[in-house]
Length: 238
Image (tube, rainbow, N blue to C red; front, side):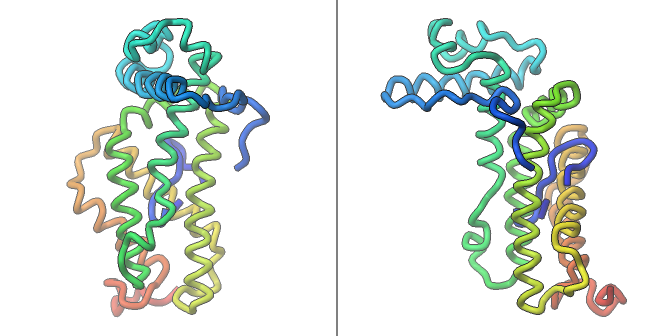
């Protein structure tokens, strides 16, 4: 479940405001309405993702993006003003993929431990698929305050979602009211996203099932959910 860790945006278990106006190069122009315009914009975003993953942000060129997309160079400026703007569109696409807003329903269970396991599994799988782009976002956010704001905004969305889950569990009497829901979400989400960064970007060698099982165990026992595997070992008390 997901403040912002040192190396990447917070994320995980069930699974801030944007900078003013053109936050991180975000476009204010209306989305295209014609089918051709929609297709062209989508092709540019997909091509930009490919180029950013291959070359990094600094070395990526707009000419490479348009060539990869198979469109005329002038078409780029119909949809985007800059490399920063198309990168923001790519980052937003990945954010939507990783947020998983309906994870409880997809878990197919009323057990919150299953919600946590399902959300962590989807988050880690998404992070693994997007690892190269996550590395690029980290690179850019270190030197560009606007992209740092974009990363913080993404992290806040995960934290808010996970804090809402914890509050729900507190209202149901499954989690102690002594915990501050947002601080708890911040701590546990930062743990998941930091470990994901170390494994999928930095190359720490941990088998996926071991990683998932360990993070689930820490989540469930930190919240002291009934039936967690740490019960009976002294972990059931705060």
